[in-house]
Length: 190
Image (cartoon, rainbow, N blue to C red; front, side):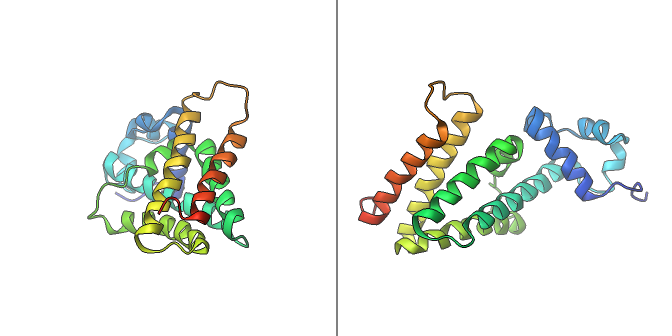
């Protein structure tokens, strides 16, 4: 069976991302995707290997978008400014793409080289930014995990409407990043 005219992987991923972002990752099904694309479900099998294959491709797509956003944010910046730019880009990505953000968190298949490479590409951007703080080896990994934990915490709490007080979330984020940066500068964390 040949692929349907006008239906390609990019179109499929855009529609699947729309479902994930608007309704949640759990609502990304082949039936929902076929309905959104106005095709019959079997037509999707010309492009993807079932629901698991779709979610894998969606994870890759999300990681590539996140890498691009982080990379663009860091270009031309260094040190504290670059870390703040990464933080803003990360939170912005999670806000614009809550479903894609969620699916990028689960890159558990360590035997999938393509997924591991996409996740590693995101990590490399953060490591390059943290290089300005003379963090390398284990210290760089620990710093990256700390930064990611802060950013994920803010993202997931915001997605669950858990910031109910009147103070601005972005201001809280920047103050927290400043505290983390102080530890990078003073070696407290390591």
